[in-house]
Length: 249
Figure 1 (cartoon, rainbow, N blue to C red):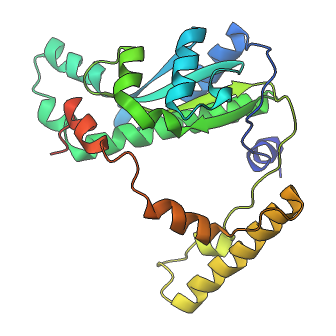
Figure 2 (figure 1 turned 90 degrees about the vertical axis):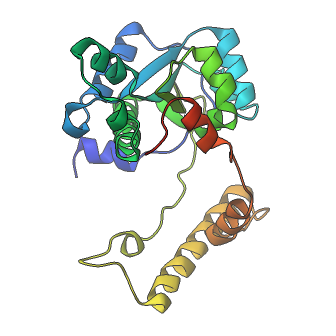
């Protein structure tokens, strides 16, 4: 165990922040930490947009389902998959890059690069004693978000991260059992063992909710997933991505 691992294992989502803003030095360190993440073939296919305009933060909070902490935090970052600069490089270098950057493979590279950078940013923030919350809700209406941010073709806003000083301590949700996530040499084929892992986890989640709500809530993880995944959400995404010039050939 060391300080880095302790920071990782202490992670929890924070949804209530004080009014204290992040300093410019903190913001710069968080972004530099994001940039230090691994990147496929040195492509660096992401951009980070910091939102300081309160009206924009409030508009983004509304898009994200009226989540107050999108507007009320120390700083709000939006992480974007970004192949726009590569398209411009193709023009400047006289290279035909469009078939490549509009491929499914490069889209996946951009998604992975962005996620790796974001997690580095989160670890940097948490190591400073700050709290964070990922905000996937900006994808509720990417047309609006793209217009707020003026993102060009080949740029897809993926998620936001609210960062700030926690206003109160939050509990940590239990994760899936390690032996259900980590498979050795091949994927677990024994369905009874597979289900036993889910059953074990369901009990942990029930215990967590019971304790957190004094018995008012006791649903399981699998019941949550069954209900959530039964509903179609953000089904416009393929159309939006194609409109942004990523035809996923």
